[in-house]
Length: 114
Image (tube, rainbow, N blue to C red; front, side):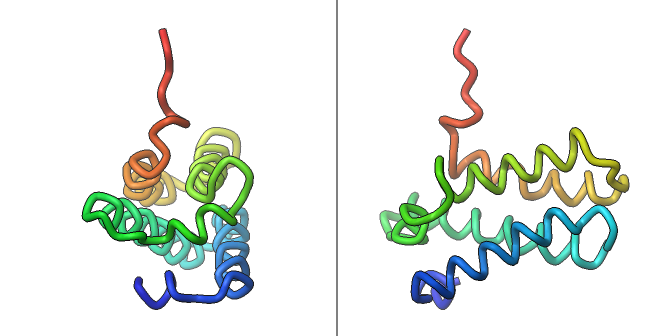
């Protein structure tokens, strides 16, 4: 993952765009869904683990990412696919593995104030 963190901004943005597209195409292709969700979950776990250890992780890229944060963008795409798209059961199971690391990276997105 350190190699991904070291990518130049344009290459990193292209990679993130590809993953975002993979989430939108995941409803029709099981292999794309598996690969995309695994990659997003690995990025989120890497970033969270690095932040816990005091390392920068993907901080430089996250600041340049989608409005509201890179991981919140993926969280939104994933939840939208689960809630509103006709997806397969195995997609929902795979998505569950990515939800926790994404939520840990963007806890303010999921906090509900009562």
